[in-house]
Amino acid sequence: MRRLLALCFAILFTPCSGSAEITPEEAEFAAEMASKHGFQEAEIAALLRETAFRKDIIAAISRPAEAKPWHQYRRIFVTPERASAGARYWRENAQLLAQVAENTGVPPEIIVAIIGVETRYGGYTGGYRVLDALTTLAFGYPKRSAFFRSELEHFLLLAREEGFKPLEPKGSYAGAMGMPQFIPSSYRHYAVDLDGDGRRDLWENHADVIGSVANYFLSHGWRPGEPIVSRGIGANSSHAEFLRAGVKPSIAYPRLMEAGIRAQEAPPAGAPVSLIRLDNGTENEYWLGFDNFYVITRYNHSNLYAMAVYQLSREILRLRTADLSPGPLQEE
Image (tube, rainbow, N blue to C red; front, side):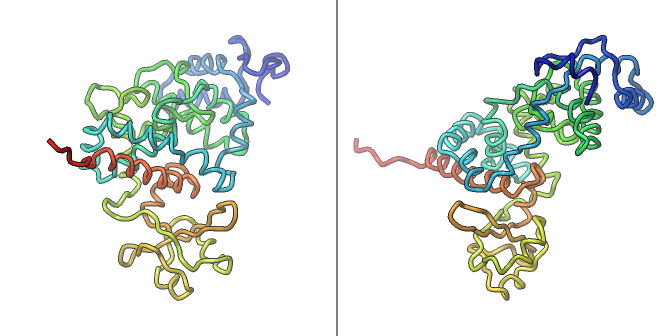
């Protein structure tokens, strides 16, 4: 465990004193930031002294929502309230969404659904200090320490590039930030300054948020105009070999057809597919995932997440279409 836990964390959320010594692992990290990126080693060490180890972060990352069965997971994210709020968000940002969709080919309903699943359209962007989250996981969670140490490196670089104080931003327990919940490496690589104001603001600037989500999808291979997923007809427990192929489309559709599986909506000609199984509470349901479904899983590496985004997007689109549909003619 990290420094002076017995004294510093009798109360869970109390940070360690700034005078505490940093651990050898933290000292090594500070030296690396100085040698690789020109930071002052003493400044990084001083910053690390201001961080708090958070036991609740370790607990949260150990029980992700994606561990739930589909029928429970879906009830969290695909709700009438979230769909209605999504249609409203689309209405309020219609011009921006139309512009971004035209330029990137990423549909507005997908962009909106991502923001809805991640933060309820900015309603809750996280209450953890990002630096606390990243240092806790980088130095106190061995299972993924290498990943979060890299994200901590990206975060400090991002703070220097964007000109904010590292101790100020708040986000998720995993260090994800802003309305679209970008982790630091994604923020650095895919966030865009869509309105040209000189800042990439993913907390309050809707132009930057919408443009950044679309850029993330485009950068990961989104195929404009192609379908995302289709119901799989005829699949059952005897088709486990196709499930083991994984989420990345790699199965030739004719091979599935030979095994008795059909797509309710046919995939693009020649495109590989994946087979997805979801527990709906009473039985398993099967879906065929296409390339665009796989792209959604690059945002969060979970079939459950991608399916929630897809289904929420369909509800948002339905409500938005109803908004734009002409009403009955009124007699004069």
